[in-house]
Image (cartoon, rainbow, N blue to C red; front, side, top):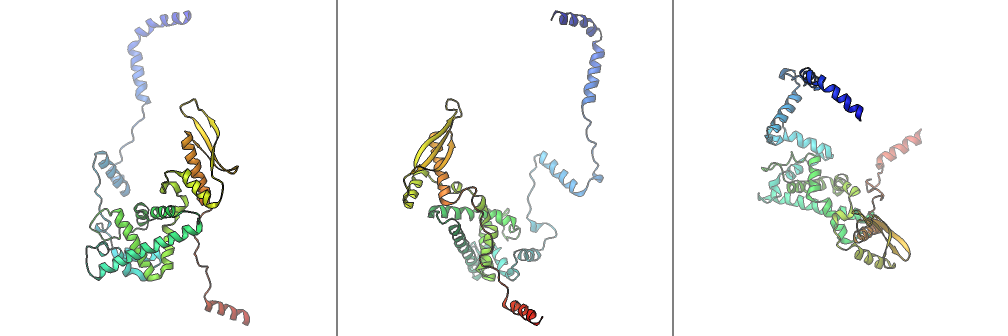
Length: 337
């Protein structure tokens, strides 16, 4: 330590005498360390997509909110061509007039009287009735132990405004809806999905409409959590009722493990037993929270709604069969050969 102090004292006269040179050297080094800015790209050297992006970023930085304009007010818009493309995507080329009626909000909102309004309302009601019936049938077939309240909650979640509005936007219905309101509200998108479903059922039959529900409305059920859409105040009481219906012994809770009980983040593991058999086990930051989570886990196992449940089968309900004429021609060709 003494040697270090002596070295510093010996360097002090040198540093004081060469202070201007050292400050200039440090200033030069700090300038050299800073990276050089990118050279500005001239406007004539930018691509068209880059020019639009730069203009948008500049407006956002200045606090200007871009004004949304409907697609119908932009150039190169042909409603008939877009409607034809939509019918081709769905495979319903014969339902163009019905789909045109389904995309008109005035026809099913009650703002316009006459036969068109009555027909649009009928399309909306038929589509909603068919979607509810198909979803109830599929859910009951895949999970027959679900109670009625849970079935209604799942159906409402699948047919809610958020879910059906996402389906409508993904299929490009938002641009085809004829409405003075922009952007189109979620309730209008939901009604449009039901009206389109009714148009498909009227033109191609209920089987084609059920395929539409199976392909676009039903898939969120695969990653949906039961207790996120179905609110249960006392899951332990519901579990006791279900065990009584099955003729099993009433559930009992036991503390299986615990750690960090003298810290700010304790963890308790509670297991639920019935006649000495472990039904479910779950952790929690408290005994009551762990007991509720264990009861929910036991209900998931009981209803068949676990995270590792078997995926839903999205195959057609009716098996594919060859036409009779094709079978007869194939048989005759084999017999002649």
